[in-house]
Length: 222
Image 1 (cartoon, rainbow, N blue to C red):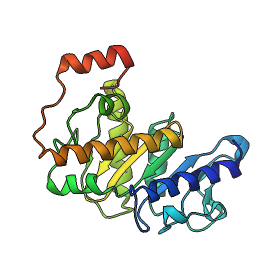
Image 2: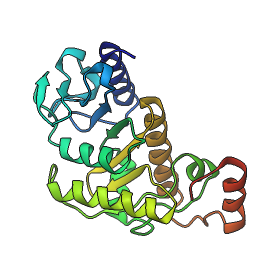
Image 3: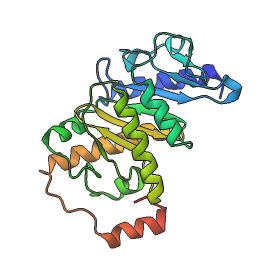
Image 4: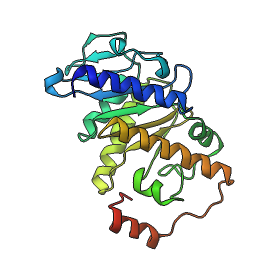
């Protein structure tokens, strides 16, 4: 995919998330890791940009050394995105939003610090996996980037990689091999939080035998 095509895809995903209510106002950001053929580095949405009205030419192009070479000023979460790419080499993109039900969940109380919601549906186990809670820090705080990088490395060491974290009072951060997959993971995460809140946070999780069947049949990372 060419650099121009990648930029257009970022704009398409941002518009889709905005139009369906997964992101609002100027909250959230998206980045993509670029191939060497496209100049290496990353594309990331500008600071305070509305994901519903992104323009391809405005996306910030950051080179492999972290210098901005084109576009408008990069999102203040750039350090967080770079920390994820460093800790998760398989990640090709990162999406961060302020999804309503997930933020509400951190205000009401998550299931646990290691799993913000319990495994209540098979698709949550299969498509999302474990999602730890990152303690509150101000937006853009370098401590968040360090915490998330360490969480990814700890999960890798346990043999159960993660593909998302939840920033307390701010929103989810999801990474994956493609923008389509990252967007789908984000949506599954938000909808699971919505289900759990709607049912009063009293739903019994899937039991170990049911989860093990999902591991064996679908390779679920749980």
